[in-house]
Length: 182
Image (cartoon, rainbow, N blue to C red; front, top):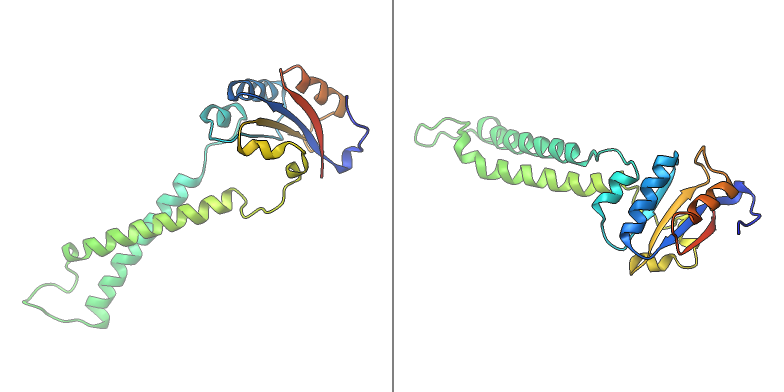
C-alpha cells in the first residue's frame, strides 16, 4: 500500500493509466475532489486534459501578439530612420517615408518578432530547459513517452495526505499507484 516515506522527501503519488480517457476522467475527479498541485503526463497532446486539470488559459498568444507588434514597429522605424534621417535621398520627388515600399520588410519583421517571441515565450512559460524533474525517478515513467498515461498529485498540495491520496488514486481505476521521491 502506501510507503512509510516522510512527506518532506516525497514529491508525490503517481497513478498509471492505460488509456487517455481514463486519465482525463481521473484528472477531472481529482480536480473536483480539491487537488490543485497535480500534473498529468501523456505520450501525445490531449485537449481535454488541459481543462480537466484546471489549468488557466495560456499567456502565449498575448506574448506572440506583443512580439509581432514590436517587430512591426521596429521594422517600419528602421526603414523610416534609414530613408528619412540617416540617408535621405530624393528619388523622383517621392516622399522620404513612402510606406508602400516599406510593407515587405515591415511584414517580415512582424513575422520574425512573433516567431521569436513564440519560441522564447514557450520555453519560459514551460520552465524549459528543465533537465531534471523528480517524476523521472518513477521506475515506469519512460512509458509516458510511448503508451502509458500518468497522473501525479504532488506532496505540496494542501489537501495531500499520504494515505488518503493513495487510497483516492486507487479508486480511479488506475493500473498502479506508487510514490515518487524528490
